Image 1 (cartoon, rainbow, N blue to C red):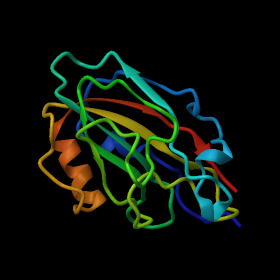
Image 2 (image 1 turned 135 degrees about the horizontal axis):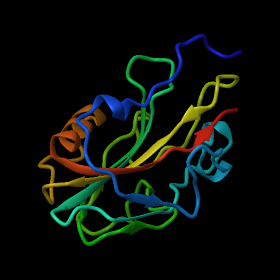
Image 3 (image 1 turned 90 degrees about the vertical axis):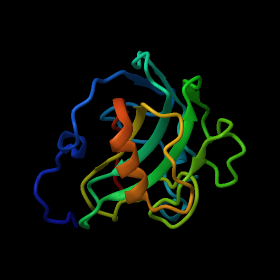
Image 4 (image 1 turned 180 degrees about the horizontal axis):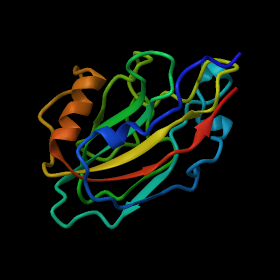
Length: 179
């Protein structure tokens, strides 16, 4: 059964407008369904974060953050699937599976916050069964600082606030998933 909600909006339209740059992936594509590998274990997936590469960001970029957010969850705050902070400005890609809880495939100096699942690392897609397709905003945020000045104990809301306060450009890919 599809939940009765108003049409979905792009939550990034409500944030300060910044220039865009290019985000590509070998694993996900805008408007296309996500493969089961990138779905949460509770929905039959493998919880693997997709490969991401970016280019064309502003020269003044001092660091990056990478996030995955679902605004279509039937609640008032959406759902944070992944928040990777303090990615060095020299890094322009992440391999498939970088978002593991142990962080062994993360760029040096970066760290992950707890997702809304309550776990560290990437948590895959898992919309309510029968709901309309959800959108997953994979976003790379170019920042004006190399470090956001927070640690892994902050909430996704605080991490997101700090990203927005220091964002100079953003790139996104928005695939979908329903089951």
